[in-house]
Image (cartoon, rainbow, N blue to C red; front, side, top):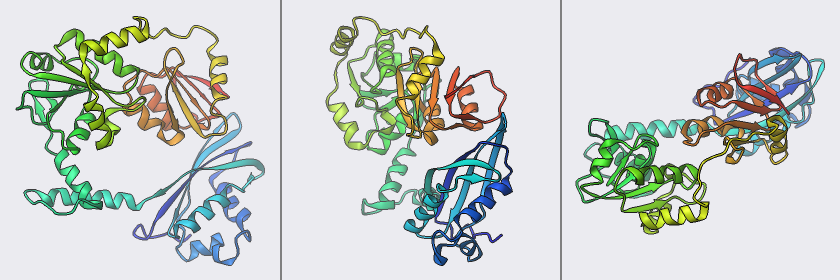
Length: 376
């Protein structure tokens, strides 16, 4: 088979498939070429495109569980955007792999040239030392932001991520990613706690400087605010917009949140009033399989996933390929995941690392795990 030079690849098509019976990789590739033949005319004939180097080597990963096969397909494309999406849509018309019925679903199309841009930015950062640039658009703007973020330092014995703490006012955030985002947006008087637990260094700083605590706009942010206020002198509290984390805010959102900060005493009063004085999460005690299947009805057909707390309240709604990043950067404990799709090996391993106890999905990769798997 022809193989595209990595230099010419523009897009990568990612697809998942599920087959009613056992199949092998050649069956999947054969179905792609065989069942798309003649559909799009000579200009977009798959075999010809591969001979011409306009599509690359098709990669297939699969697992067979209980006589059924599930897997992932990657198809590199050097075609333009519209032609690539046509090829992707054509894959979804395949209804048979080998001798068995099957369904292919496109999960995403990625512009792989983004990684080259990332390399350019990282390399340019190293070349930029001591040199300023004019113009705040495109790569130049990103480069300036990354250069500012590179000024992060480690503070005290606990090596907390921080910016410039020489002034009298300090903004306290939860993690390193929050610190980086504020530095990118020209807010330098910031320090991170490296987690939800308040470090002694920050408790000490609160006796010397005016502290503004900046928390995420979710239940975890409220709990952190109560904990920090119980153990340090906090003057103001700023909160990210509902459902958002400090690390993902734009510069405008950061400034608005900080302008809307309120005295810590007022924030805690409102928090206690609105919650009836209770913030503890009460674990779900009913039929969890039934409950998760009911939750699935909220996302059925969407190819999305629900990340649920111990009381089965929704922590986040994400697409299937955002599950692992959401688990990795998320701060609130996740008890269960409901997924409209395949629980891959990578997803299951990420769930194990984060202490997830239940996964409800359409199909599962063959992986040994202590997580309870619930078939939807």
